[in-house]
Amino acid sequence: MADMFRVVIPVDSMDITSWQLAAAYALKMASEASPRATDVVLLTHTKHQLDHTSLAGHLGPGASKALSKGTTLNLDGGATLRHATLRTLGYSTRNSIVIAFYADEGMLETLDGLKGLAGIVAVPEFDGDIDQWIKRWNPVVHGAKREATKPLIDDPVIERALKSITQMSNTAYDVLHPRDKEFADGVFRILRAKGHALDPAAIKSWAIRQGWKPGGADELSKVAAKIAKLKNKPSLGALHDPHGRYERWKG
Image (spheres, rainbow, N blue to C red):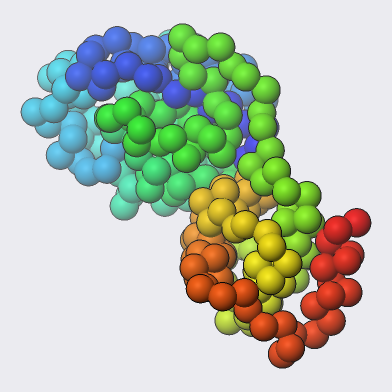
């Protein structure tokens, strides 16, 4: 997922320019993908967002009606455009470009969990709707200078500890096994007892960037949040070799 195309269109979704830019970026991505992508998916939360909305106006009555009925439209360069919702998207998106219109964090996390996407063009409805996703992936933001990608976890001890959780856990599912949760709980207790601050949002994004399924990453962040909220430093007496493990994380 880290090397795919990602673009954000920070233009009011009510403005037709938001669709024009999104479509142009999608076609550019399709032409530059390897292998060349021909499937462009317009993703919305519901099918009704193709009817009597700003997006419907951008598309025009003919195109919006055709997409709503499941018809595939021809685009330049041999690409085609089809419509999907979060319910109908499924897994048929390998080497596809997805235009996530009215995008929010939930929609983009769904895309983060898919394998084989060639690119994502995100058009948020409101400012701030996808700030965590932008921080997670450092996508191209139209009209803005792209800065160097920053680490999501700036504490190397925490990052090494998270890598130990990743090595011990099955990260291919959206639900963490109880054993993996218990292991993560112990790791976070050690970190908290040793004075490290836990940022659940950063931990979640780090896990997704490392290839965790979003649901599993979310569960991991909730375990971190639970430990972060403890009023007192946790006792480590019941954990196996907590001090030795911590020394290994310190490098």
